[in-house]
Image 1 (tube, one colour):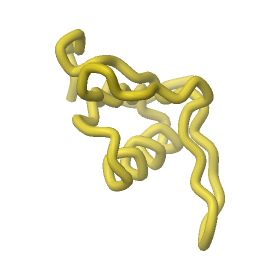
Image 2 (image 1 turned 135 degrees about the vertical axis):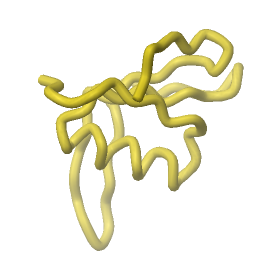
Image 3 (image 1 turned 180 degrees about the vertical axis):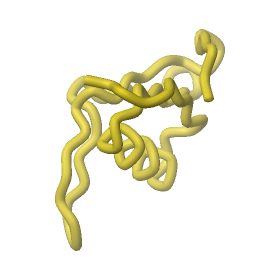
Image 4 (image 1 turned 60 degrees about the vertical axis):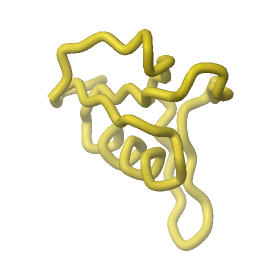
Length: 71
């Protein structure tokens, strides 16, 4: 359940996905914009290693199809 603002993260690299996951865990509705043809994960984002968390409600959209408004 999202209680915060809708946020778009441009780019699905390691930093973009990390920030998207943390923002989603903080209660924001997060959409990650990817370049056309990039693979889309069906189960959100998971971090493993020094920390472990899962953000299963992160959405993905092709960059050219991204529609706001976003914060």
